[in-house]
Length: 319
View 1: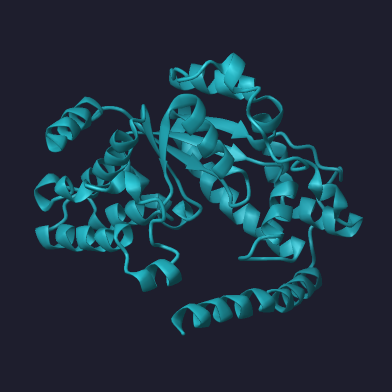
View 2 (view 1 turned 135 degrees about the horizontal axis):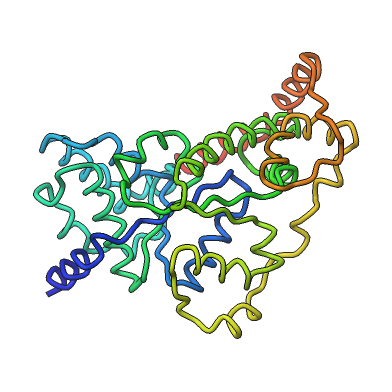
């Protein structure tokens, strides 16, 4: 009976687009995913792009053996061993919506990587009773060049955050660059990849700012609904005022020294202008080779505790 119900849902949603959230790490994509879920009934799969990458490996015409291999690999992500849950960042944490999927995810149902991805995204949405299926991953940039083969029918939502605040957020995380100038280069590289895909999407794409999510949530919701012909699942007049956001998330870049700020704005000058953020410096001040060498050396030193902490955590779990 479950299979019959899912098949009916799957066939009815076959022509519906998959929504793809694109945004640099630290830009607020988790917040956007929560708002899409709460206000519009989305199912947003967050799996470090595991399904997307598997579909990319399968391509347009996989062999039956390749399909079996990827299904087996996905099974280990959904039903990981205890050790894998503790040590692997790729184990899927929220597994409940995928319980029962392996009755549907069988080789005979997969003729392409796109079939593989759509079936998994659709099953999760079906399991949650969601109106729309979407994905969000900080790792999509690695294989986003395969997106036409993986999600041919899609809508793209690009989220940007003032790139100066974005780099400050990056420098405070437990991964990646800590030194602001190195973090600025990280942000520049990531937004470059995502912005190209957003531009390519044309009318199938929509740009949202982190600042709008916080300061003008109602306008964000109305703009999104109008652009993609979506209907809220809640009364926006009552649901939006009830939302609570963590404070002090805008303008944190003002704590940077003037020297750091001018160099970071120099790196990100074109991106700030393109997406409507006003630089404090009238002309870009590009870092010299010496500036980059010093920043790289400092960053390497500052990241040692990150690496040692990870090694300690891994040793503790394996002991």
